[in-house]
Every structure is written in C-alpha cells, then in structure tokens.
Image (cartoon, rainbow over all chains, first blue to last red):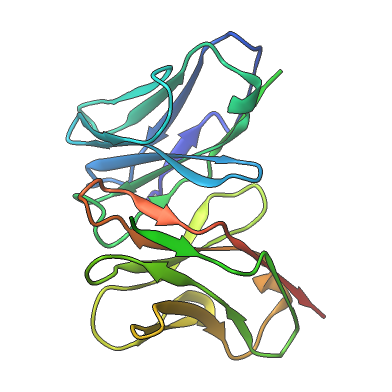
Length: 113
Length: 114
C-alpha cells in the first residue's frame, strides 16, 4: 500500500511569491491534515480537510489556504511568502476524523529567500 | 486547554541500556495519546498509541509506553537502546473538541551512543 506522498520534496521561493504544496493521502483515507514544522517551533497545526471541506484551521494568517479534491488529494497554498514561512510542511492522512492517529508523508521543505 | 509536555530536550543513553523519553499531558476527559518518531529530513513515523485498555502499550521497533492516569504521563520506553534509535521523538494528544488535530509536544532528541 502506498503511503502519503508529498510533492515537491524541496521548494525554493522568493519572498512575496506563492508556493503550492501537494499531498496524496493513503487510499481510502478521507481526511488530510497539514502541519508546519519550523525550526524551534515544533509542529503547528495548519489545516484539516475531510470529504472535500475545510473542517478546521490553526492560528495562521489567511494567506495560508488550501483545498481538497474529489479524490481526497490536497493542496496547500501559501501566498505572499515571508522569510519566516521557511519550514518543513507535513501532510498526514487518516480515515475519518483521525481519532486513532495519522499517517504522515515525508514533507516538503520550503525555503523562502 | 489540552496540552502535552516533553520536559527533556535531549536524552542521552548508551547502546544496550534501557531508555525512557518522558511525556506528560493535560486533557479534559480520557486522553488519546500517541508517540511518533522523526528521522532527519523525514516525516513522522507512528510508533504507538493509547486509546483505552492496558496501561502498557507495545509498539513498533520494540518500543512501549506506559499510560499513568494518576501522574498524567505517557512515557516512551525501550529495554535496550540501539544506535539506530537516535532520532527526534514526539508525544501527541488528540484534541477533544473535534477539531481533528493532534497536539504535539516540542519533541525530545534521543541520542544513543555506541
């Protein structure tokens, strides 16, 4: 069974640009979660999508947005990039609400210069 | 508010010795607790979870964790550490407000020396 896949692995953008990160969940999983792992800040919850709807978002500005497609894959978009957006962005998937935990992908390393 | 604390930034043990990585939690109601491990430049890998039942939970790679309700702790343990166990370990608790999110501790770096 394929795991959670994220693309690209690495992304370098200039401040002010937009970044798009992609995630494909495990087959059969309807929920996708996005987390930001910035140096020294641990894992911060970004967004939760389930059945195509945004169910919850963390304490991030509106320039962090995303969507979930009918096949349950997901995109995370970060507009007007700032230097402090440099981080590892982790996607995870779960069946239903993730009551029993998630399966994480390997992440996208976003570097803003 | 629910929270998880990992009081040690780093734990150092010698190969072959037992290891413990500490985690305490604060939740309202019964906790759903998790341990994940992260190797350099990789995502998080699931190790084990406590939902209900026996307080001693066995997981992947020989790890186990002990749920202690009175001490609100969920410490990760392994009887005999391997150098390959060196990694960043995260404890997490499920948010009970149906937000779908896991709340993670700050992580503990485990260094196993040969």
